[in-house]
Every structure is written in C-alpha cells, then in structure tokens.
Amino acid sequence: MAITIERDGYGQVEPNHLSAPRDGGVYAQLPANKEIEILENGMFVKYDYAAGECNFEGDGAWMLVFNEEKLYDERYQMHKHYAQKAADYYDGKMYPRVFRISVGDIFTTNTFAEGTELKVGDDVTPGDDGFLAAGDGDLVFRVVKEYTMPDGQPAVKLQCIKA
Image 1 (cartoon, helix red, strand yellow):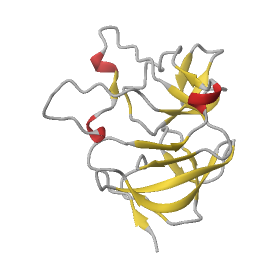
Image 2 (image 1 turned 60 degrees about the vertical axis):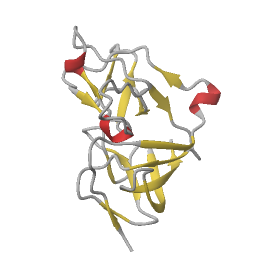
Image 3 (image 1 turned 90 degrees about the horizontal axis):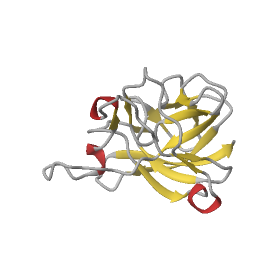
Image 4 (image 1 turned 30 degrees about the horizontal axis):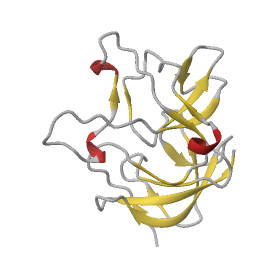
C-alpha cells in the first residue's frame, strides 16, 4: 500500500527522536543564500560554512530546516501556516535554524513535492530544491511508517539510515 502526499499549506515536521537538540547539533549562524525565497520546515539545506551561507549546492552537510514558528495572525495558528520567507525580513536575509541529522534519527514529515507517492521501505534523500525525493545520496532516510501529521494530513515517518 502507498500513501500520496497532498499538502494543505507548508511542510511540517514532528520530531519523534532527533539527537541534534541533545548533542549540540542545532545551528542558526549562517544566512540562507539570497536566491532562496522561502524555507519550509522539513526542507533540507547544505550548511556551507566556507561559503558563509545555507544553500542547496554547496559543500556543507545536509541539515534539516526546523525553524521556530512565529505566527502573528490569530486566524492562522497551525503548523501548516508557517514558513520562513525572505520577504518578511527588512534586509531579505533569513537565518534558518537547522538540525544536524544522525543515523537512527526519526521524524514525521509531509515536506515532499505535491503528489509524491511513498510506501514503507522506500528510501528518500534531499533533492536539488531542498525537498525530500526518492533516491540515494549522502543523506538517506527510509520510510518506516505511513502516517499523518497532527492536523490529519498524509505524512510518513522517516528513519535516517545513512548520514
């Protein structure tokens, strides 16, 4: 059986078991590349310290975007309503909070391209646009459960099998 990811709003992350908050793997010192206009929770960026930025093509390690949500409109207070947008910053510079991923880390997400079909046992990796996609790369996750986000949207539980 497979699950089709149909998102209503922005990507979400439910941190089931992430080691970064406990082992010092949380970073937020580098701005996003100026070409990146939006970062959704659950996307991945390369933490390219030599270039002084987070990007999709650099030499840094892939890291999970997991920003603190700031929802200022009282009508929109769900996880799906938040994404970090360059247009919201007076100088256009976003400083995303990113988590280093370790083998064994587990999280639930729906941050895939619209219409992505997944089933238990599939492997996914960060794509060129920061969204997870089928494939094999430097960072690989295995779908371990077809699931839902807390608001009921289709999602999958992932476990890191290669970092």
